[in-house]
Image (cartoon, rainbow, N blue to C red; front, side):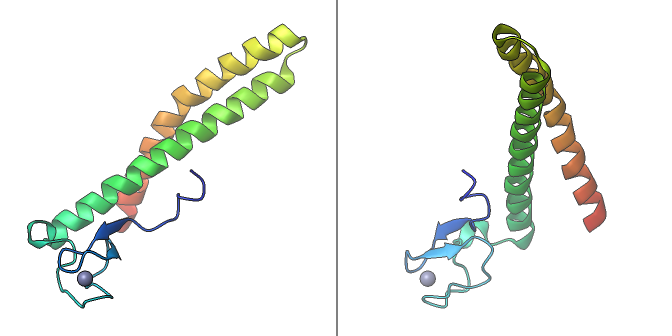
Length: 115
Ligand SMILES: [Zn+2]
């Protein structure tokens, strides 16, 4: 999952079928001006799709990250093996619950900064 996080979103070129970046203005293989196909070549729709994909990633990263931080905190601060498991699960859950709004806030502020 970590290795794929920064990978470009690849689609099949509408004209030649080769893998091409979703954000490419033209296909590097065949030079097609519409590698995404005629139905998705509106610039506004492409931008919306790219933004949604990035927002989803931000949300997942923040939820998982906060959950792991919470689990680590609970596990490290607890005493006793049972309390370690309970604490890690409890704080991990809190981290996940906090991570979702954190991801939303990150997405909102990025949108505000771009306009
Ligand atoms: Zn092509």
